[in-house]
Image: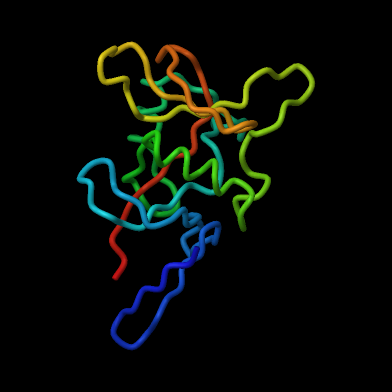
Amino acid sequence: MEMVLEEQSCTTTLSIGQTQADGTIYLGHLPDPEDGQLKECFTTAGDAKNAKGCRLRLNFNDAATYAKNLDAHGHNDWQVPADYVLNEQYQAKNTGDFNGTYKDKFKSGEHETHYTSGTSHPRCANYGTVQYFDKGDQTLDSKSKVGYVRPVRFEYRR
């Protein structure tokens, strides 16, 4: 899907999976979980990593702290994706510049392909939504369980 944005005398076309000039990757025109407004959603170019460049697996609270403190691609307004945004990431995982960047296959000695969302269970504060990127299943799991994280940010682009 392409989104065409007009700005005075120039037109910009955003395509899902397209890397932007700032290095973020466009995910789509989605509701921002913080205010419900439709905005353009962008992800980091890769999963959360430590200082050595190794992919991190974080529990619910550590993922939120990581995203809150992240300063990447010239932005510092990152968040852990809500469950519906995480599903959009799953749907787009093989599109454009997303292709091959998500942990969606098992390798020898590895057992997990799930990503942590920022969505808590409405009636059980100790559970949150995770999504398995090998098959696409979303499920509730303990917030203490660790998973991969791909932070997102939202902005108006007119």
